[in-house]
Image 1: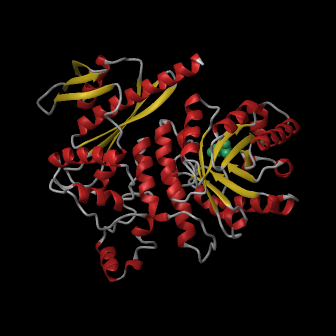
Image 2: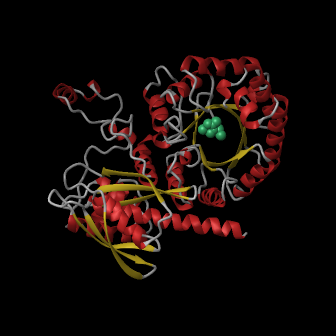
Length: 511
Ligand code: KIV
Ligand code: ZN
């Protein structure tokens, strides 16, 4: 590999999943991981196997399905964590254990309550234990950017000597600034004697909106792995966005002569799938993947674009997989046109999945005249409708002449149809209240969002509902031409996901 190659380490399935409400099932993770693999992401951090049996199963499932990317499992510097990570990666073609411990005075003193010498000892021991299980070990100095430089150098040197092939320098709290981060990486190259035996990685959080800038400045100082997430998902304000790192390196090769192996044309699809699965909408003006990223509104800009696209576009929409010619399907489109659309959008589905999607497409085409790419993506990505509870009917009375909206909901619960009527502060509230009357009331609504899948007043609505129960949080999704139906479907989907989580927790407790 050339010395200018930057390894792209995607942590959407681990740090991204740590965004409140972004929890994913093993199936969700496998779907995203397959896209990342096809996109040629070098390393996929699939989860934290010791965190829960569900996370263990998800890492194991991803490791079993993905063949070309390295699959990584996170582990604290604790024996049981490292062993669990090793076990979850047993069937990986190429597996990596990523173990970490905090090295900053604040974390060592208050969180770990350990003296630095002890932290050093544990760090070395954890790397050695991981190396006994697998060849590819990454070690992270959590809160590295607020660590004492001498202690950080000592730990990095020790971790490399103990067998770590990758050393990650996280800006855990998104505190650093580009110039400082560049100097920190250079300092490590100047002072750690065995630094050439490892790849230096960075993992920047976005608390000050500097995650991408900090990552790129570290690359300029010699880092050759960047940890990032699709859509910038991640703990608190998120991580550096993969799409921004990849496209900044591709677009400004004149100033940053580095390459990645990522097929950037799959970025839009990865972004849409992650957004659909997590229920985290992408802000319209988000760099690279926002709906407006390639929209030119003002007359002056449009005039410039017609004369030469380079006037206002520094990269082409096609280079990130955004189609400008959005071939529209409709009620008369047949199976062949539908299949060719799926292929054009990059979906490789089996025959049964195509048939299911085609049936849903026909049902949608009966209700919506033009079916756009976004509608097709939601047909494929929306898993709502599966599970023990199904929404079979919804009727809502609301409007300016009605004092309080009333919703009548019919649910099919394990094959039995039941109906309830409820009032609410608004039509969505009334529908949710009726669903609650038919199910349990132990869950709490933590967030509710709706977005239009495409433009126009006939656009489908995609709703996301986050529910929490006993500290477990799930996000359900629903899509429909009717916003209220989409919302009710999302609530039901969240209930189904809670049931799965409850069952998984019970099964784990019984083991
Ligand atoms: O932000 C962080 O420090 C992390 C580590 C576990 C790498 O996510
Ligand atoms: Zn992190």
